[in-house]
Image 1 (cartoon, rainbow, N blue to C red):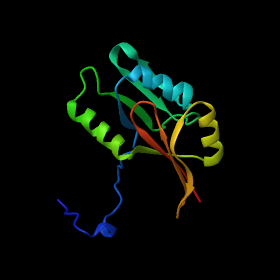
Image 2 (spheres, rainbow, N blue to C red):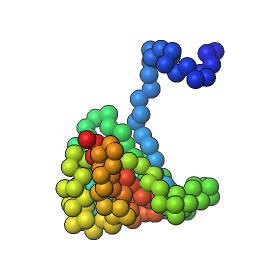
Image 3 (tube, helix red, strand yellow):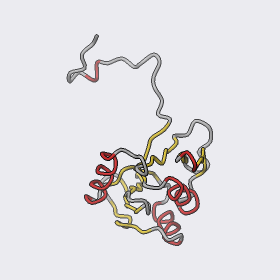
Length: 147
């Protein structure tokens, strides 16, 4: 077995690399979150089975193979540590996920017209622009535009 240490540049690419297919965001109510992510934020449905607390979305127009987001329930039978993790990140104002936009100002304006609350309006940074929005489910999401 090869030890990683600090010589990352000496590593050879994997012959059979993994591909990111799904990530999750903790939410108290997957059905409520699903409605917000699809009807307000504009994501597309991948799978929705409210009776099984299963809600999966993806970016609109992303096509086959797009990374999906599992709206992971913390209630009614969720894991206590997930509720604590989610609450503490929110209290710190830390985004749980980052999305990109071609025109952050236009995207922000459109989302505000849909009722989305921004914790931080677009601000120029060393790498482009960033904004932070509240997903109405106890999470902050970061929106960036790279320049």
